[in-house]
Length: 351
Image 1 (tube, rainbow, N blue to C red):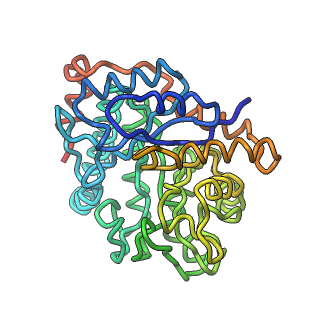
Image 2 (cartoon, rainbow, N blue to C red; image 1 turned 30 degrees about the vertical axis):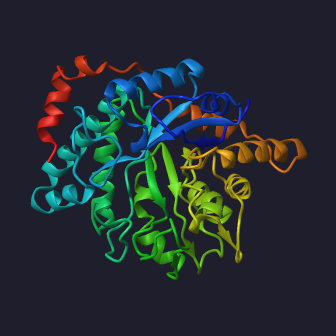
């Protein structure tokens, strides 16, 4: 089985010839959409349909959490609350908060799927320790138990709408203040503490999670490498100790903080190879189609050369995990969705 580990991006609201060429490459397994790819629902639906005509197996992804991380906000898309709003609701009425979280997941997934999007990188499982501005109100709560229950409810809504999901950022990004988009965050707590708190939701959600995204954080008492480049974190702890069997998807490897390793900055190709070698099934490379897209082309060529040279070997198990993230059922079109009792009920429960 061919392994297609690269998740790339496109520059606009329609496919160019360069986009088609890159997406047709057998090492590319999908793409991530951004707000720049949005004009309206009709154009988004046309774009995703064109991608699927090119290759039905491509995984069309987006960061669509709610709050400040929601790529599509107009032309009928529901404005979903930040996850902290669900945590606040939990403090008033835990059962109502769980129902609201399920409703948010169902609305999120069913609206995306009606426009041809397969997968969203949600829920955030980071704890709201306070100092992390990049996480902030994206986190449900500071208590790992509350995070677990609300994330499980959100995932239930996503799965009801036929969408897989991705817990992030393993083992936890909420304790560090630095933003990995520009810096290399460091967390000096011992493994025992991290497992008892930040990583606990990954253990408790072991039978629920379909994918996990590791953090671009160095946990200095565990490994000198960031979690996304660490075989200890991904293979020994996440797969071995916690028993996770789903897909592991790297965080964006174009981030400046993401490519720093042992005092040097890796090339995008080097970062992809390091992430895959550590145990990631897919490698995410964002915002590189802007301009001439040479970084994407160089990375595809670099991975192909690494395969020919024997420096990287495709993994059938990784490809199976990628394909498992594709929806298994057909989606309702938007107009039909707007009339269904399940959607209308869920919409009424969104805070």
